Image (cartoon, rainbow, N blue to C red; front, side, top):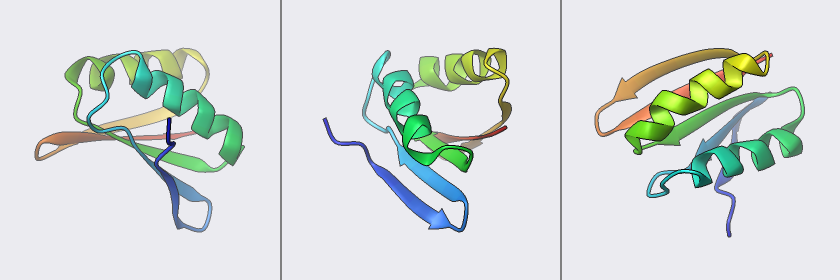
Length: 80
């Protein structure tokens, strides 16, 4: 299992979970959040159920969430 996590700017990380079905995008998101602490995370997913469910779960955990469709995938931005 490889975590496709990279820093894209100061304090902002990108997690690419394209090609993964539930529950893996959520599992990878949890692992990424443990690694980056309070930094902002942008998740890229092409899985419609993940695009729907991840923002709900993250909001319940106290994160601010923005989600937008970009062509064939979604970009979900989260921060505290």
